[in-house]
Structure formats: structure tokens, C-alpha cells
Length: 176
Image 1: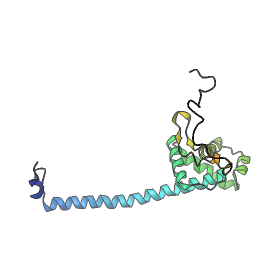
Image 2: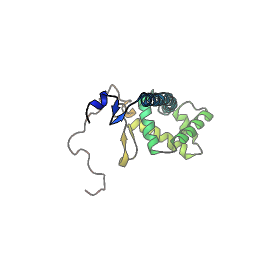
Image 3: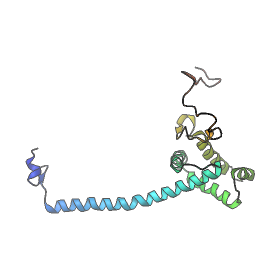
Image 4: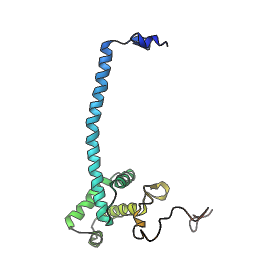
């Protein structure tokens, strides 16, 4: 293909007329407008979900939490549990209806639905460990900001490495 095709008003051997150029411009502009309208709507809904999840997590853990980490935890938990939204709604409903003020009071309730307590445990576990999922498919969300390090913050440094090569041995009772 020669550069003459570009300069003489044709592209790939086809003439490029004003109408074709206008149609292309309108199509691209229309797609841009549609994407700019749809993106904020989905982003706003996602932002509300993250805010709700972070607020619920703060109730469950008793700590102020980072909403950016909240978004990552929510996404990782949702990837592993298709009913997470419904489970969170059920958990929030029990908390709201009971009027409990903290996690200790919630645990004293002993809700009728064991799935509610299971959902709360998964959320708390994720924040404390910084990991979501079982060992086979575990996803690290945060290490340094895991809640397990908060009680000793300022007293003990957060470990940055293991004690040496092969520090993690096999599971007890496993065959190598």
C-alpha cells in the first residue's frame, strides 16, 4: 500500500468520502456519550456497595477501615460467593433490627440463621488475615494493613520476611 492512498482521500484502496467520515465520527461520538453515561451509573452503584461493605466491616471489626481495601475485599469475597450481596443484606438486616451497638452484642444474639454468622466470620477473617479464600485459591489483599497487626502496632514491627529458606515446613501428618 502506498502513502498516496492516505493523501488522496482513500483508505485501503477505497475512497473516503465526507459521508463515510461523518458517519464514523457520529458513531464514535455516540459510543463515547453512551459509555460516559453508563460508567458513572455503574461506578456510583459500586461505590455505594463498597461504602456499605466498609461500614459493615467497621461495625464487625471495631476499627476504622480503608475503603480502597474494602473494595478489594468485597470484590474477592464476591468472586468466591455468588450470594454475597444477599448474605450481606441479611446480615445487615439482623444488625439493624436487633439494634446491637458492637460485634460483642451481635455475637451474643445467636441469630436463627447460621449463614448470617458465617458471613460475618468470613468478612472479619478477611480483614484480620488480609487474605480471602481457602489455601487452594487464596488471594492476598493486604499484608501490612491486616488487622492482626493492629493490637501490637508501635510495640512490635510487622514481619517483612520469613526466618529463612524452607521456613514453612510441611503440614503435620503430611507425607513429603
